[in-house]
Length: 223
Image 1: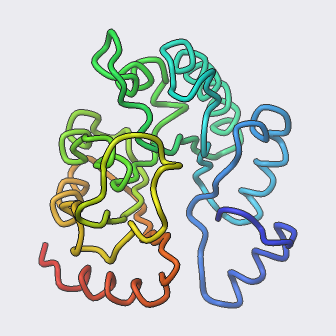
Image 2: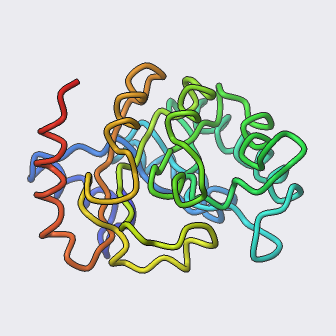
């Protein structure tokens, strides 16, 4: 769940139920988690969503800094502890800006070190991982168990990688199996480290046309 589109949480849950859908996670803004985490908890329970995902963390400049990451780690631990006490799981959504160099290797390495896996883990978006010149397979194996959620998305071939997510155009999201991401390798690797939920994500303007193509691709995989 990401946004209620003018509905209350109860109304949105009724829409899910009426259409045979189940929410396994919900996005929550950093400010909301900071200032009103009790309402986030209530909404998650209303949806029946066991995972609450922090969508972004504050940064002091265009890029995340080591200080930003340390503060993020403290916040994610605090959010996650409260969520766990409420019977939920906390995660942070990776957007690719977490892979600048740090004393630990990358800022993501620092964030993983700073967060308690009992309280805070990660939602891997394979689009943004590859966009940041990283390998989803290596990350899944290095941080076994830290990625319970995965957004499955592909990048148009020829897209200029690196930079900020704000630089990416909608049409650079293409059907699975047609872009730069080795989707099959990521999904195969995800089985061992324990990814629990997968989300087919398509941000293109014509996503309604592309999603059936992606589903056919997924059905073609044999593992």
